[in-house]
Length: 509
Image (cartoon, rainbow, N blue to C red; front, side):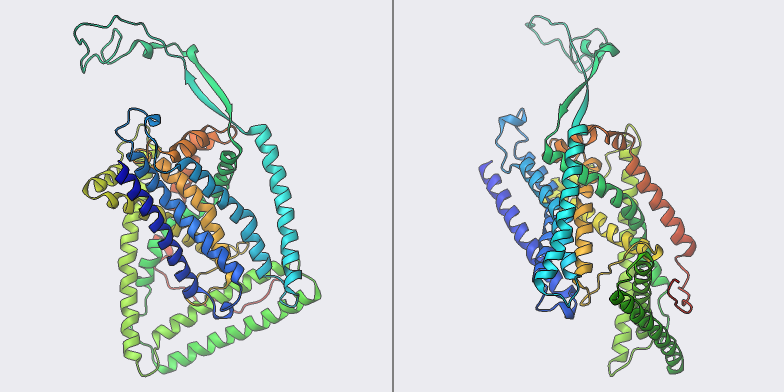
C-alpha cells in the first residue's frame, strides 16, 4: 500500500504541473495581439482560474483512487488515507469562490477601466467596486449562515432482540439476520414513530461551498442543458450548411460590398456610442445598444469568415479550399461523437437519477469495468464526461447570448480573445465547475461511493435547510433534461436553415 500511496502523490503532482502548462499554452495562443506583453495580472488570474477549474474536476477521480487505497479496511478510520481529500475539497472551493466573486471582478474592472486614467486610479476604482461586493456578500453570507446554516438528517431509531452466540452457524442467504421473516430483520419492522430529524450546524466553509453550488447550479442547468444539445448539433449542422463550391468573383464582390456597407454602419454606431460615453450619458439604453453592437460585430466577423471560405485567394487557394473541406468533415465527425456523448449523458440522467429505483448504474458500471481493464481508463473516461459538461456550458452561454440581447457574449477565438472575454469565461467555468462536480458526484454516486466528495456534496448539501428540496425532487436534473429536449427540437426544426443576412442596423432610440 505504501508504494501505491507514493504513486498517487506523484501522479497528482505531475497532473497539476501539466494542467498549468496546458493553460499557459491556451493563454498564449488565444490572447489578442493588443494584450501581448501587458495585462499581466489578468493573465495570471486566467491561468490560475483555469488550473483550479481543471484540477477540481480531476479531484473526483483522485478522491476515488484515494479511497481505493483503503478498500480492504473494515471501516474508513482503520486506514490512513494518502491525501486529506475533504480538506483539499474545501480549500479548492474556497479559492474558487474567492476567484469568482472577488479576484476576477477586480481584474475585469481594472482591465475595462478608462485607459486615460493612471494605473493607480484604475486599481483604486476596481478595488472600491470589489470592497462593496465583499461587504454585501459577507453580510448576506453571515445572515444566511446564522438563520439557515443547519442540516436536517432524517434518521430512524432501530432496535432488535439478541441471541446467544450459537455453536453452529444458522444464518443463510434466505435468513441473513435476526428476525422472523425471510430476508427481514427485527429492526426493519420499526414503527413510523421511530423516525425523527437530527439537526446539526454545518461548518461555514461547507456552507459557502453549498451556496456557491446553488448559484452555479442555476447557471449550469440553463447553459448546460442548452449546450449539451447545441454543442454537437451545432457542429453537425455547420457541416450541413457548409459551402458546397467556390463562388465566382462577381458573387464575391457583391457579398463583400454588402459586408463593407454593414461594417460602415457598425462603425458609425460605435462612434456614436463612444461619443455618448464621453458625454457621461451611460444609461440602460446605452448599455443595451453596446451589447447589440457587440453581437452584430460578432455576426459580421462570422459572415466575413464564411465569405473567405467560399472564395479563397492567394497562390495556395486550392490548398486553402481543401483544408476548408477537411475542417467541415472534422466538425461532422466531432459532432457525431459529441452527439453520442450527449445522448449517453441524457440517458444516464434519466435511468439513474430520475427513475427511482434506478434501472441501471449505466456509466458507473462502464467506468468501473474500464478501471478493471487499466487503472487510468475509468479515470480518463470520467474526466472526459465532466469536461464535456463544462464545454457544453460555454457553448450554451454563447448560443443564449446570441439570442437574448440582455446577455453579454464573450467569444473565445484563437489569437483574438481579449482579456475581459477570457476573465468572463474563466469566471463562468469556475462557477459552473462546482456544480459540475456536484452533478457528477450525484450522477456517478456508485463509482464515487465512500469518498470525501460524497460526504460534502452527497450528504451535507442535499440535507441543507432551505435548499434540500431542490435536490430531493431533482429540480435541476428535470430542468436540464427539458432544456436539452427543447434545444434538440429547435435544431431539428431550424438548425439546417442558412442564416439570412440581417437588414440595416440601427441603434435603439
